[in-house]
Image (cartoon, rainbow, N blue to C red; front, side, top):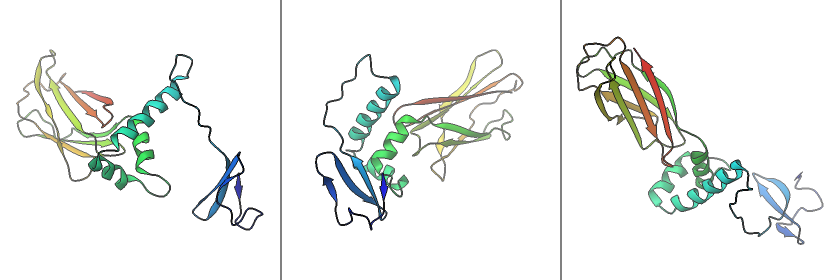
Length: 186
């Protein structure tokens, strides 16, 4: 419930009795019921979304003990978001391979493939695999990070004489180890 600062409860902060508490965010007071202190157990009767959120909260709590990772999430948080909420968001959402600039790929050595991967923070790895039309693998290696956190690029190392029917496969992994795959057949 939202209230104005000029109401009956102005001047109060924190817990009000045993059932309510007041918090102020950006100058606006909010009155909420007190959270319960019950233990949460993950069992078969818990809905899958609740289980996923429970595991996200546990993962965020443990991963933010690392100061370097905390700084990465701190850089993306703004307003009322904290590194903790950004870590939960990262766990709950998959990385998205939003664009692959394969137009410069002509099957030659040193062709450049540009890749854009959207995520809360920079994904930890992007792998590029190129296969011939018969399914044999030409190359399989990690892409290099670009200038911005969402940019990656790959420089080809092999010649592909049979470009028609070849497959370009891009895979990305984020910090919670979620995997996304993007495939293009020439």
